[in-house]
Length: 118
Image 1 (tube, helix red, strand yellow):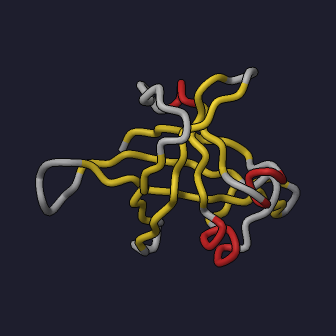
Image 2: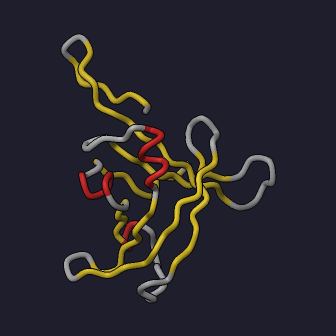
């Protein structure tokens, strides 16, 4: 399983859309406003569809804006939770890849910080 992207969530990621810099995703089409659906699954095997739009801003250039409000609400995501997106080979079909989304929250346990799945 190859990690594609990981970040600590900001208030903007929680309240609006998750922003993924284009450089994290390889070659994005240079078509600002292009929309697509991203099919992902979580650690429980639940499938999710995220609506994505290619956008541009002066500081980061092209980035992918991921609409994931339902996922945020149902998983009760918070600022500073860590989201990681992986690409993994399909086991049953033998070809192609799945996109897996994982979310972790830092908790303090017996004086130690640990990351627990959300």
